[in-house]
Image (tube, rainbow, N blue to C red; front, side, top):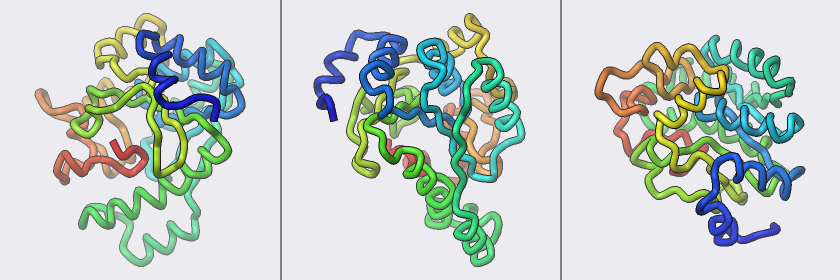
Length: 233
């Protein structure tokens, strides 16, 4: 590891998302990975990274329960930026055992089942995507949910033993959309249909006017439990 968390946060304190990503891709070129969910924040990061290095390491976790629109966006993004997104899938044997034991929609029954499904479909593939890297780039923003208020630009992810870097940390949703429209960044059309946060199809619904932007994720749970385990905050 080249630098401490404090050193990175000191460097990034007054930097733009572009400057942060430029620094990471230059100093951790072969040891940095960005995991995209194809959400609008992640599309902003992909756009910036493509402008710095089209060979940047971009990974995606295909849970097998994604919206069609997300798959369509993968193709559009790869074509627009002339890059390749590396796709990681869950272990099909483990998925088969879970579904055959607890049902296809087990996650609606209780939080334990939902977290098991998230672990199998997301957490295990994530560990493979992160393996061998020192930096994990994410699209997390403090504005996204109550569980993300204390984030920093750089922080230690104990679960995966890796430094997590959040270039869009202080961006508002208005900042994100202004950037997307100005640069004509391709994005998921579900965002225009009331889906500010898009995960797996059966676990995501459109939000109503006045609802929190994460209200459509695992809507049957309390706000403080609404993380899949990819991010503890």
